[in-house]
Length: 248
Ligand code: MG
Ligand code: MG
Image (cartoon, rainbow, N blue to C red; front, side, top):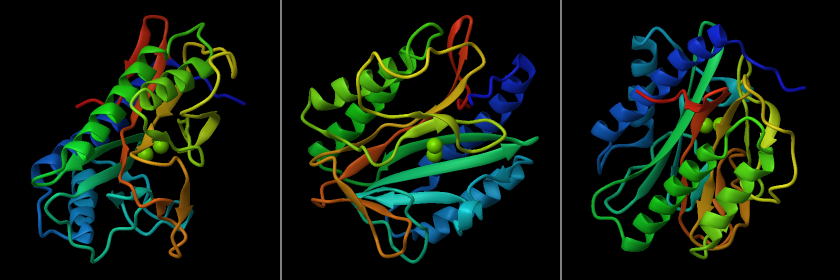
């Protein structure tokens, strides 16, 4: 069942979205070569709590940190720890928050130091995928139009669209119906209605779309070791078009 949100609930979700957006702004200012992912996670947790919000990922299904931090060939769900961020890395940071019982969810990939042109091209394409997807998040459209727009944009540049992980509805739960795949036909899925709130999150690989899970049980990596990028926004479908809630 897809839970529709009232206008009042969407305003609460906007506050949760603002917290994750401001957190990612802070990450963009602080992330640097030589820092560990654990140190970055500490900054994220402190910042979220300073905004009178609760870190949405901490202890979620046993996840031990406030941010998922995934470097280079890591796609998503990287566990922060002792790994040192190096010059030339691309670092995907995914952050969740809870405000008054509602979740916000957003992710960005950051370039640290001197990053290769091919990694920068992948990041730019993934951000474009998110933008074209948001533009399809309109009432009366099919959910598949979001998916198809992402796939078309990524594959036009020869990139791999991750199949094993998808976006999702969001609200009082981090993961609600419907699933929001980043691939597929425009003709499938439910018709979008005002009050739906979706976490749209293209995960795009420079090489194959295939991924596997590391022995830690959380971290997804690309099967061919190629880099991966991830951008995500929490988006409400409204009578007036898409409303991106995860903005600062
Ligand atoms: Mg996320
Ligand atoms: Mg998400």
